[in-house]
Amino acid sequence: MNTTFELARVIRPHILTLTPYSSARDEYTGKVGVFLDANENPLGSAAAGAYNRYPDPYQSAIKEKLAPIKGVRPEQIFLGNGSDEAIDLLVRAACVPGHDRLLIMPPTYGMYEVSAAINDVAITKVPLTPDFHIDTPAVLAALTPETKIVWVCSPNNPSGNLVQREAIQTLLENFAGLVVVDEAYIDFTDTESWTRQLDQYPNLVVLQTFSKAWGLAGLRLGMGFASAELIRILNKIKPPYNISGPTQELLLAALDGEAAKNAMVQEILHEREVLRTTLEGLSLVKEVHPSDANFLLVRFEDAPAVMEYLLGEKIIVRDRSKVVLCDGCLRITVGTSDENQTLVEALKKIQQNSVIA
Ligand SMILES: *Cc1c(COP(=O)(O)O)cnc(C)c1O
Image (cartoon, rainbow, N blue to C red):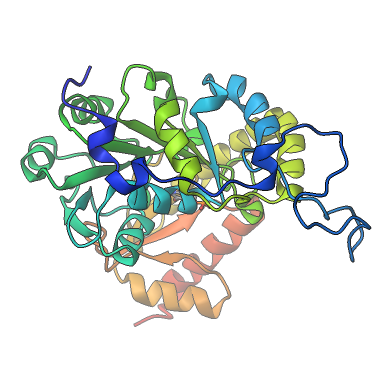
């Protein structure tokens, strides 16, 4: 339980009282009728397919189908144009620009900081411990009345590890603002999602995405899970038709593909372990951090030089060597067996020929 949290004290007052845009599809939700209300083209589309009607602004069919998969109620689900839209809306719902702040724990996902900066919201940074766990006493000490959101990323990007549950629970029980747990990589773990705790913690927000395990990054679909009260607020401030009609149709079909998703996850996890073992056997690799995700954070003697050589071979990885606690590290996404082998061959070439100084 958290006795200090009150949603009305976390959400900006003018958002609480805001009258949202009322779309034509808000006012009449029936499917059959003569629709002369939305200034659509009644004749059809200037493209193959019928896209002339506005889509469901609340994506009800998807939420009905997604709720039992996630073990939540449809009214606890928000769908965004990527998780990035949910991140931005949360900042805008809670933080008064130039006054409020949010807390992040570097090294972590870059969008939390960028979203704050776009919205002129200050950031408190409390680094993770050297093994990438939450420094709970430091986080609790850094919270101020102006701190409205604490971002937790678990499994964390770019370190790859799950963050201790007890630390997240301590935050949920002691912080009077929102605790957002970003679970973009949860499908690659066998831990229980924090969505199971939504009814217990009204200050909990869980983010997930269809971009990683589900293989739908091109569709742009992120999920937010929270109390029905908070979801209503996000719905109030989102662009009315933020998920396109074709995207909704594709996702409805994709939700039948959970078994295919799970099979891909198993294959990626297998490839991750093969890649980890192989990398650990290379002398130019200093360390492979433990991963609960679909990528490995790998420390090299000379990361920028390795990065540059790989780029010359058209192998693209992510340079995290300038990021706090990630000295010398590249973040490597687990690819197909062939792709991983291509990477390993290139790294072996560096070793054999000393192609980098
Ligand atoms: C990839 C990723 C996301 C996904 O963002 P989308 O906008 O849904 O594609 C969210 N959070 C983290 C930590 C990620 O690494």
